[in-house]
Each structure stands twice: as structure tokens, then as C-alpha cells.
Length: 372
Image 1 (tube, one colour):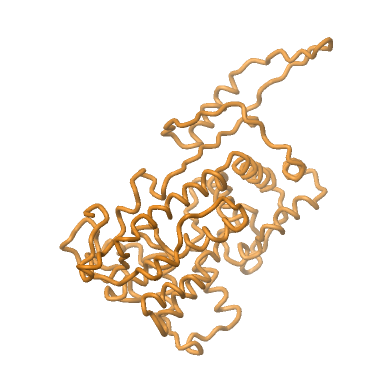
Image 2 (cartoon, one colour; image 1 turned 135 degrees about the vertical axis):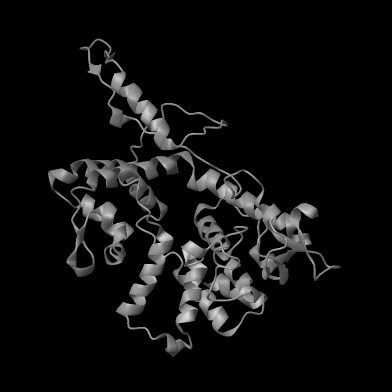
């Protein structure tokens, strides 16, 4: 919210527009479940057909807050159109059936499209959400950042550009453009992102504990204390995302402490996994493929491994001078963790090439990065 306000000030955005952008910055991740994206992994594992997204839940949570605390928009000089604008800043076009039309937004027009690039930039990925978590996570991880967002604040402007990057004849909109001298600084932003993933988010130990947490929740799902949603409807842990009231109760600490402090046999396996996490008894890495392209998803490789495990024969595990022990590899003993580290685009291309830059001489004409 704070950095969004800074960028608004740099672009001379004031009044209701600035307030809406700041509210969107404050509320854009309201819909996250416990441990952020890990809860999404639980949903994908237990219900692969689920269409749930934390962005949609963020909108539902915002509506719940307005309803529960009887917030009157007019008290803040806002109206329903402004609320739609805030939701679009978080989620993108609200009318998904017509999102391919020439200009799918209704909160603000093409002359203010640049406001949609501040919180969640769907075109370049350069937004204050990224700048914020860079600062937050590096403060804790001490990995080191090279990118300085404050330099960009001094070198941004609003320029006219086609709405469709692939069609220069499409409707003209106002976009955020950056001085060409900041090209290297923008490049460092995505290199910092890659470094945070490699040394932090996707570090081997981090990914192992992530997997253990998800396994604990999967083991607890059927016997976790039912979570009451709207009208008293009860949900399992992995179903709470389908009800905004139930989801609002799932904090990181409450979920794990409910498992740790349980005594029933149904949560025994989940308790055991959480105790292993507490005691740093990590899953063991038995094989690793580095610097190779693995095209399949994690689940597909796990299915192949499980098929192998189901056909495997018991093997001799004789102790020195002791009795022979026979260990059978169970399908549930194997898991696959696939890391994907890039500069921000899954196709491997340089995201900086999708940014708009302008030079000092032709300050009114934006230039694509690849034309520099």
C-alpha cells in the first residue's frame, strides 16, 4: 500500500484514484490461505479439478469486510464503480466472458489504464507487489538486492501506447514507461527475483519443509476439526477455500496448532510430520537431477515413481552381525519436487523486453526495449 502510494505520487495520481490504488495494495492478498501458496498446493493435490484462486477469494474477503463492518463507500467519497475499480486492480477484468474485447475494464477508461499496471501488472510483471516482497523477504533472508525501486520512481512517466502489444492498430491507452537509462536497473530486478527463488523460496531445505507441511495437511484433512462457514455449513481443511467465512478462520498458527495439540488417532500421522519439522528431521534426498529440462509436471513423475514402487521387490537390509530385515518400498514413501527458476516468465524469455522505455530526446515517444 505504501509503495503503491509512492508510485502514484511519482505519476501525479491524486484523489480517489490514488485512494483506490492504495486500498487495492492493502487488500490484494486477502484471499491467501495458510502459508500462502502452500495452501494452494493442498487444494491442487486433494482436488485437482478445483477452480479456486486466492485472487477471487481476495474479492470475496473484501466484500465480507465491507458487509461485516458495515462500511459505507460514500463515507470515503467512493462509489460502486470505484469498488469495481479496486477489484479490477486486484483481479483483472471482472467480466471474464468479455475479457478479450477491445478494452475489458469498467472501473477506469483507457486514459487511465496505467493505474492497472501498479498493483498487479499483467503485461510486464513490474509492479509494487514485487517490489514489496523483495524488500520484505530480503530483510529476513539477507540474500542481497541490487535493484532499487526508488530510482524508478524518479524515472517514470505516462505514455500513449497500443493496448495490445501484438497489434499496433489496437486501441491506444496510457501506459507506464521508464527512462531508457534504467534498463539495467530493471534487468537487475528480475535477476534479484531469480536469486531470491534460488537461494530462498526454492532452496532445497525450504522445498523439503514445504512438502512436509503439505503432507501433514493432506494427512489431517479427513479428521481436521470441521470449519464452520456461512450458515453453519461445515468444511474440511481442503474445502474451506470454497467458503469465504471458513477461509477467514484459517491462520497459519491455528491450523498447525490444531494438529499439534490434538490427541485423536485420526491426526496421528499429521502430528508426527509436524514433530519431524519441529525437530528438523527432514525428508531425505535420494536423487537429484540438476541443470536439466524436465518437461513433465511433478505429479506425472510421481505417478511413474509410484508405479515403480508398487512393482518393486523387498530388498535385503541386513544389519552388521544382526538379523536380516526386509524393507518394502511403499508408494507413499516417494515424492518429487521440481524447481522452476526463471526471470519471471515461464517461457524463459527476458521479461524486460515487454517493458516500455522512453529516451530523453524523444520523451513523448515510448520505445520497446528490444528496439533499443
